[in-house]
Length: 203
Image 1 (spheres, rainbow, N blue to C red):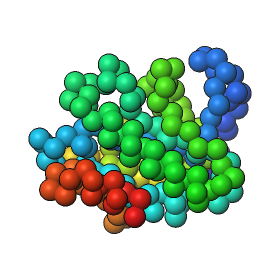
Image 2 (cartoon, one colour):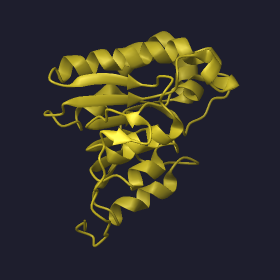
Image 3 (spheres, rainbow, N blue to C red):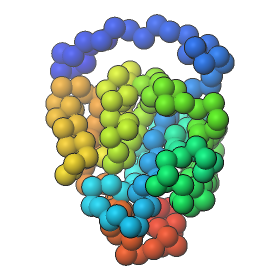
Image 4 (cartoon, helix red, strand yellow):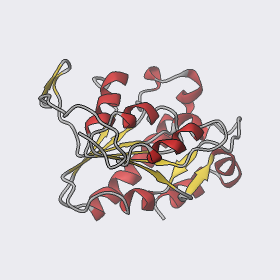
């Protein structure tokens, strides 16, 4: 496969129904929803933040048949210590997004991909093989979207997070930067509070 900018990659020729993980259902749209440490209100930062639902809606194909939200486990025991206090809020925010996806994409099956069988490797594969992948301000999703065979979107990098990724769209035309998206940064969440954040993310 060759992009308009001349970048070449081999054609994808794997059976995505059967993998080393057994039978796995992959989504047409894969979204990495970083949550835990973004809600850490004791360490305000300006280079991490939440992406508003409207940014996803305007980029997802209206014909999408499945949408997967890749996020941390809601089980405290499966989270880093500094993320364990935020699992309930992360669940609530993820469920709010799911409600919006189901409302605006009624033909799509919407899943939260964070169960016990969801591993780091599988999360990377989900982002790499989706027809559309979307990541926010997080270094986690940067590398799998570089391997994506569909179209990938990333929030414009800044400060210490993914600034290097801003150079990639000039070389790979299937990777698109989301310039000046609607974000709520960690430091602003600290000032506004969680209730405001819940209203904001779906506004």
